[in-house]
Image (cartoon, rainbow, N blue to C red; front, side, top):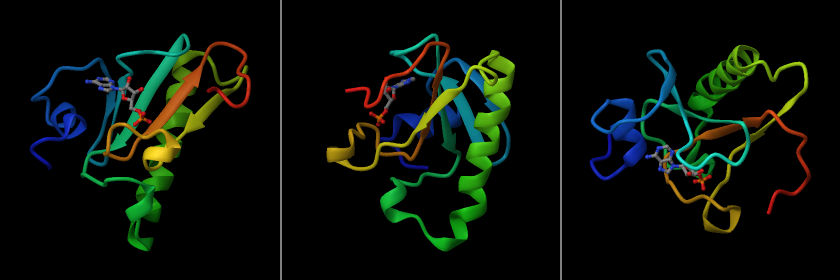
Length: 115
Ligand code: AMP
């Protein structure tokens, strides 16, 4: 838990968010500024700054974020049509919140890159 981290506060429910899924390892909530009909962020509950500091021990946790994404995509009804998973890393990667997260984006046909 990092005091100044908004995603840590969402995980601990100190800050409000539209949480769609939570378990002991991960939390998923709707992005405040959605770029598509479905835009959910999946985060580890524990504060990890970015992919840039990942350790081998975190490999199961990272896999878990992806299976949570897959299940949420099914619940959102976008699994058949397809969706995009994005993890921005560092400033040049477009990361603005420095608590690792996977964007689950779908519900429309995506172009590449997005911007
Ligand atoms: P990134 O730019 O990859 O770090 O993504 C950060 C995302 O977090 C952006 O899409 C923001 O819209 C989203 N975001 C920032 N603050 C909040 C919040 N309080 N609740 C939900 N989403 C947020």
